[in-house]
Structures are given as structure tokens and as C-alpha cells.
Amino acid sequence: MNEAWANVLHRQLDSFGRDLIVRKHLYLAGRRGVAIKTWTETRERCPFFTGWVKGLLYTQFYAAYYSNLQIDEHSQADIQHLIYLERADVLVSEDRKFMRQAFLDLYQREGKQYWTLDDLESAAATVGQVTRANSEL
Image (tube, rainbow, N blue to C red; front, side):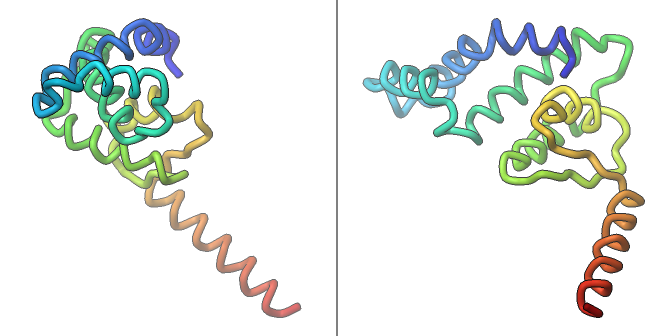
């Protein structure tokens, strides 16, 4: 994980998430405090909301930290795809720009893997070889 990103995440995740709950979830009018307290104390129970908060925060971080790189016009869609990694171990993509860097900064530390199509093909061939070898036993 990028050290600068780790610092931003540590310092700003709670306040950024609280702000999103207050601004985006107006139907919680009388219960915003409960929603904020629940989320900040038990984030693991809200993995997709937490992923969304991290993704939005990361998009802003990327624009500032990698200021010499252009933000991909599909960055928000990329973040949405990355949020689904909560339930996956591998992402297969040929994207070598925003999505790849976002993946490295957001998920690589968690042991998740970013594969190209060549990596997928190689893994599939290996699985096929192992399966054939096991069936011959």
C-alpha cells in the first residue's frame, strides 16, 4: 500500500464517511447519529459502504498525489468494480492506468491479486494440468 495513501486513509476515513452519511442519507434524518456511530464502530459489518467511502476518498487522493497523471474518465466505474473485491481474491483486467494503481493502493496489502488475461490463461492451464494429473491417479 502506498504510504501516503495509508496516512490519508487513517486520518480521513471516519470523517469522510460520516460526511457521506450525513449528506447522502437524508432519509436517516433523526437517526444520523446512530448510523454514524454504528458505521464507525463496526465498519466490518458494512463492507460495501466502507469500500465505497474508501473509493471516493481514493479518487480525491489519486488526483492530488498522482497529479502528473490524468484521471481516467471511468474512474468512478473502476472504483465500483473494485468494491466488489470485498468478496473476490483476484481481479482480471488489462487496465494499466487508474484501475491498476487503485487496486495496488487499495487491495494489494490484503493479499488480493491483479491478473492480466495472460495471467488468467496461465492459471487456467495450470489448473487443467493439475486436474488431468489428479484424474489419472
